[in-house]
Length: 485
Image (cartoon, rainbow, N blue to C red):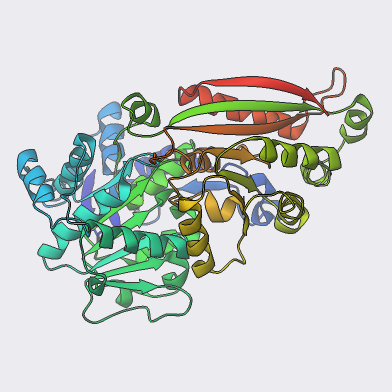
């Protein structure tokens, strides 16, 4: 096998037809949930993703380690074109010296780096491309900031992609807090100009630039994807493919969805995964708040359980969000717990609006955040919540489960069931940041047992079992309480 480089996105493997078919099968994976997608149902697509093309021998640059691993396992001889493997030997102490030499923060204080952050920065600079797996509250924005300052000194223009408008504002605010001027940053969302001739850094939602073609991305020397787990979407993948001449590319995320397909696509686009630190390690070192999980299993009546035993998943969800006693239980729970509470829901009109109307009657400050809430309003709510001591934020998972930084959250309530590893861990992350008023956060995971006699468990109860599995894998402590509705 002869491996050469087409550009910063694709390698070309010169192999015979038999080996090409073998590689195509080896790098072929079923996409989770594909059978529910229209293209699969209409037999347009077989539900599989193929990362190696037997027709032209192309595969993502970031998957080179897996190609070498395959060749070694099969005793296949291979040659790699000079310059493809261009890791640099950089002294870690010099990286640390550079990091601590950065201008003091906006408050005149030196930036404090943790050892694992220096390790992550050192790894990124040494490899030119990688996927940094670092949980919420581990200081990903400081890692990004330091990389930006390094490549700015190299004279490169940078594009930072984030999934939401709130994160554009938040990351910009973080950079300013670290001591950089906002004059260096151009923010892109909601129809603003996609480029700026003089500012070295563009922070943009991916939705704002995904239709741009390769010439637009050619202006950048470095691309950084924050909350990179969102990059499995086709439009985000297209952005990375069109950035074909961008040598330095880094993805950062706190969570992967646990599937091999997801990981390999992200590694192909950015580079091999580097685990920076775990949430459990952060809790053990008291870097983040201690997490206490109370699982509340609501036992529905036998009559109700019999009625829903043949429901589809969608019908079961509709039944739960309209359940008067269940919604009253959530209202009473939020009323009884002290501190700032983040109540997360999935369906806006069917559930979020109802919960907000009920909870807004309480003698507490109550905020409602969903997709229709403007970026400015979300930022105002976030700022207010930081100063409150007993407020309730009723928010959709989509707006508050990823990336939003609120230090002063004491309680999180899962009002809607989910089995998504990314959503669960990202949502938990909203409460892990420490503040002067808290050192721990309490999660109330509400589940529904509607199993009728010896029948199989209902959909959402099975999803609850999946969440318990996630908690065990992450070494989170939890207890299960049963309540009869």
